Length: 442
Image 1: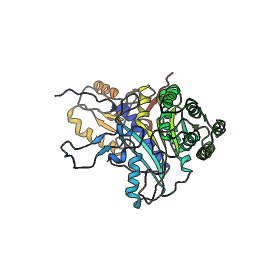
Image 2: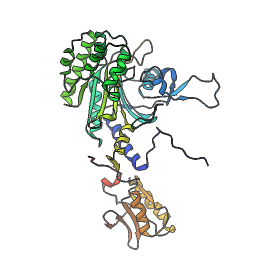
Image 3: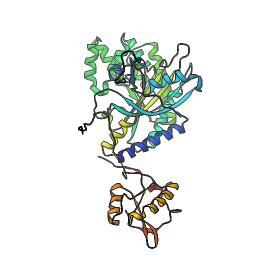
Image 4: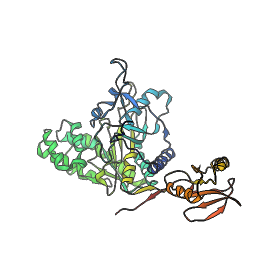
């Protein structure tokens, strides 16, 4: 027997924590479907050529996939997808003739990134994405709609208050061009690190990249601007930089903020430091933070992409946003803010007087399950006290007994025991499935 060695960056939940994660996934899925998004699932691998050159050090993070016995020229180089947007773009190109546009899809899958594991950053994790993609042109109003969908999902989840930060790539691009900066992408990547490394380090990196000190200061001044309405535009114009792309971005983001405030006042914050490191974003970009835990970074992000999916004849622009489910759930559990009220879905344990009672117990269990009650039969016949202890350790609220007077069921929390008929009895609705307990932490 070889020694089992944990692999960092590949989180595995215990059963009670997995219950929390599954309830999050169910709520997210149901919300996405309420808003008209259809589910798809894409393959785990894509050609490395398609995955690479997407920015944010994507090339370094791609896990290559190869059959151990493969020869050098057997297959094209394959890699595990590091997000769900790149494979979705390929999916649209491959199936465009069978899709109805605009196409609204959601996708909940594992992704893999070969980065240094740390709190909230994993090598394998689950994302929940929604995207709207169209043929030729994508109407602007979808860029307002997507954060409203995310807000709807988050309001149904037991999570702390949150804010959705929004920017448009045209604002920093136009601003940088107005300052005479030529390396727009490189500058965006540096500014995108602002929350992680702070303004002093960003200024240092900008000057190392060749920007004059005053230009670097202007870049930081832009990044410091934020507002919950369209007033950010006046703050930007006060910096004295002019460019037509900047004007376009200010107008677009002003429209987004005005529309969002009509439907969900205060939900969106125009935050001009938000850039997103992936190169395929071309317009609006989003990030979401838990209020009071901003240092943890974004738990939900995305943006608009105009040229990621193109076959040379038709371009399919899209906008999408992704919830980092593993990142969010792990954070809440690790801080003690959430837990499940039991370790198993089982609501009823059927106790055994003796092993001869097991066939009848199995029939009772089948009858209860047929009516939607999660049931298991005791692993072995034992004293009732021992079987009740077993149920208590698992968090199973009810124990079913066979007595001289017929079957009875005991609520082991209250001690109440009543006669029961497998054809009619059911636990209260709140006990039928596990639930999430929230705890306030100072």
